[in-house]
Image 1 (tube, rainbow, N blue to C red):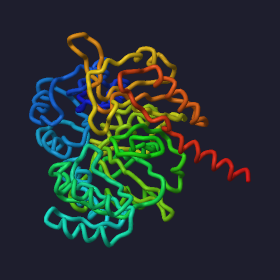
Image 2 (cartoon, rainbow, N blue to C red; image 1 turned 45 degrees about the vertical axis):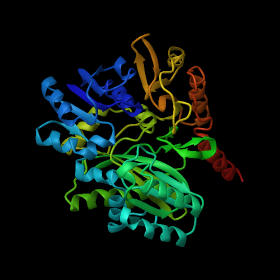
Image 3 (cartoon, one colour; image 1 turned 30 degrees about the horizontal axis):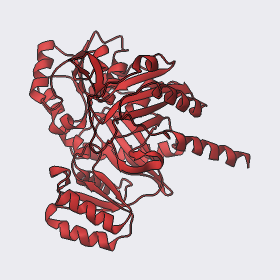
Length: 438
């Protein structure tokens, strides 16, 4: 079969890498892709938000399956368009993708179907003075979220009321997120460990992928601004079987049932962002697609044929039997200096061949391009590369070390990465061992 993947980042490189392994796939295309994806797929110069252009390509090339990476095409209705024209595509339709497209919709949906989440109030631009009053009435820390898409940067955790009022002003009056921040959600701050659980579903049946933990903040020890993600690892030891069962019964089943009741049948990947509180897991956010960089640590652990799983979701034939490698995976993101604020691009990247030769290491491109004047690989984004290492199920520290050993072989001017990816899981494991021995 012929497969098209839509998108250009590290997530899409991981998807392409896994799809390429399927014996069902004869030809693989990616639009628009990146140089790393270009080593295993044919790149197509069509932007991810050009829905008509993508559909024309699918018809012209007789593509059998399209897999959507980023959220914007899903929220714009690419699945609706393709399905109505008889094209097979993996992802939720527009009305179901609203779970990510609108924070206000998601919070109201959770309240309606009694899905555990933080207490909240939503405000429109016309209610900004009411939002100010509300901030002054509630205790800090305070969480403020832009209603719409903001490239993973629309959430601010404000330590003081003054900071919260400043964030509110920047969103609503300064329009730092454009229309996405004209309406907002203000919610209580939840204490606990964050975790991500990705769910594959055919709208009725579902499978939970190995739980992962992302590192959103730019600096070590979770300091600084939110980013699109600076690294991840899976499976995370903080999510035990009891938590998994709670997520299934209290979150995933009610979400799918509620969506179906509203005629919003959800097929595809549902990303559940969790806070593991003392009173149980609560939903921080939903995404309507694979997470980034979680995909770079989850798919390498999958033993089964990924394309078969995707087709089963589309066909309403998903089973609960999925096989995973008994290993751990760690991904370190190498970013451009200055990210998530201003950063320069066009910096030559060195050491990729050496790092790629490391045992059990896979490098996923995110923000790279070829400088056509010199033919060299250069930086082209904030998050440049994701370096993923696989290791023993029982030795996460060794896997972390393997990932950093490969990262240290890669360099470009201004390259930056966190030095503590996975360390909180190591501390959790050590604390668990100490408790067992005491």
